[in-house]
Image (tube, rainbow, N blue to C red; front, side):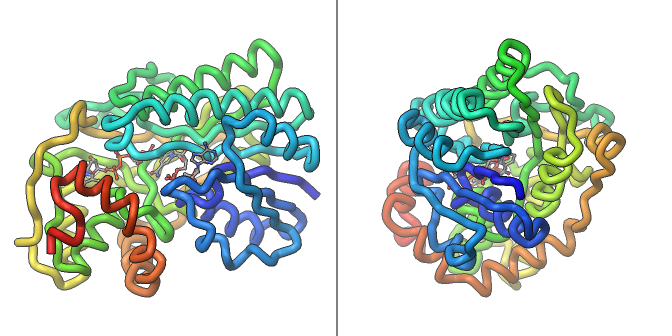
Amino acid sequence: MRKIIVTGGAGFIGSNFIFYMLERHPEDRIICLDKLTYAGNLSTLAPVMDNPRFRFVRADICDRAAVNQLFQEEKPDIVVNFAAESHVDRSILNPDIFLQTNIIGTAVLMDACREYGAARFHQVSTDEVYGDLPLDRPDLLFTEETPIHTSSPYSSSKASADLLSLAYYRTYGLPVTISRCSNNYGPYQFPEKLIPLMIANALNDRPLPVYGEGLNVRDWLYVEDHCLAIDRILEKGRIGEVYNIGGHNEMKNIDIVRLICRELGKPESLISYVADRRGHDLRYAIDPEKIHRELGWLPETKFAEGIRKTICWYLDNRTWWEEIVSGEYQEYYKKMYGKTDEEMQ
Ligand code: NAD
Ligand code: TDX
């Protein structure tokens, strides 16, 4: 039996990972450590709360005493660190918390891994650490050797955590692996991110705010394929290595928004071009050759299927996202887009 601490497991990818692991590995015990920020929702984890192989602990990964106490109690074999401030626009409005959680929090977790002898620390990173690629060079892709070259406070904080993780590997011999994944989509994604924001607004016949001309390109991966890739890295990945994760699925933002309108039967007149994001990365594109060659990973869900499943999930789970788009989110929305979600009706 492996004991696995999953940090940030009440968020989008972490919760999908917990569901995936409990089902795929009936011998594992999963302990979720989450602060429950605006992005973390305990209701997401309701289906597994009573599972005897699951435990939820509310704590901040920056809180050394709380983290050490949990490691003392559980003596985990593996730690998978999803916990992070994850939204680029929020990092532009207020970088400070990104430095705290994404950098200091990662260090606190790795110190606890050293102290209590975890056999693996896996850092969930992002393709954003490589900066961006030009729109007119489709031949260029991010490989694991692409230099770190960040654009936003968010990506800089994630890159800092990556460097720190590799330093802990080299200096202390901590058994670290890192994955850098492209943009994820799927169930339970907070509606501040492009795809769920457009689905939620379109369903409410509200404007669809596209930054700039909507020509920026992202490489989209269905969340379950990300979970599968991390599972492979935990089982067969080489210590001290970085693995890129992506599915060769580049799309322009505007094409995604138009597709969502089509799928929901909503008019494109809802699209509203708004001021561009500061420092907006032009294009992300992952070369997943290493993880394919070494670990045999390939994505299983095609975009056409994944986006339909995702849209259906948001249609079937209105209460989940309607509850979380209240309160703090309304304040953020106003700061970000000028009006609250409700005023935009
Ligand atoms: P999310 O914002 O949906 O969830 C983050 C979770 O972390 C929340 O449950 C939140 O409560 C928790 N958290 C935040 N600060 C914490 C703290 N100080 N202590 C404990 N818990 C804390 O994020 P996500 O989209 O699921 O991303 C998860 C990870 O994957 C992040 O590290 C992100 O950088 C990385 N990533 C995300 C994507 C993507 O497309 N979403 C792509 C590549 C990598
Ligand atoms: O209202 C919007 N309008 C818009 O045009 C929003 C929220 C986004 N966009 C654009 C900006 C990006 O080009 O859509 C694209 C995707 O934006 P986000 O969903 O905010 O994702 P991105 O900035 O690409 O970062 C995501 O992928 C990498 C995750 O949020 C990160 O956590 C991950 O590391």
